[in-house]
Length: 189
Image (cartoon, rainbow, N blue to C red; front, top):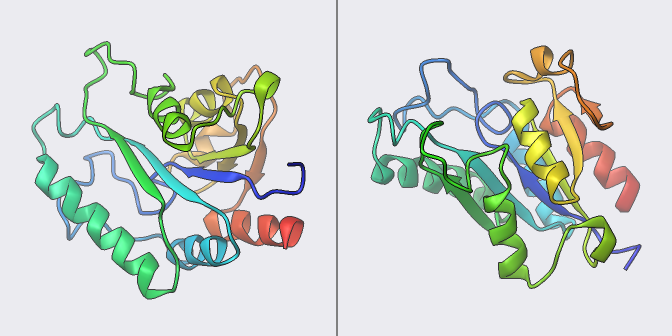
């Protein structure tokens, strides 16, 4: 399966849409980063499966509810579909940092749920399908790396600060999701 295309796991805030230190709380505040929707659509049309894996502690903090989150995700998927693409699935963690859940990144519960759905493992020792975790924060890359995903950092969102943090593993760096998409399309298509 060396020639098969990897599964793409994307963080949301700071990767697909603009992030905010005050949280993205409303549908109006959910604004895509230029080129991100087109990048997802291009990857999807080229045969890559795309999943979104996102911490959404604003729900636990009471800043917005799950209906608002679903409206944001509906907007995102509709924009991608309008460009001819498809998001295969969205996993989110609604918990706060002190809730001790297994899904909040840097823990890998959301990625494990995707593996279960696909009936595979991204772990390198049993790897049947390759996966790439794209994020703008250290915890995004750590969650992916813990499950055997190839980590990729984008410099949008918190990425410019993240690139200077100490990591115990190597990762690739891209200007934004559009640059990541172009590199992957050149490599696999």
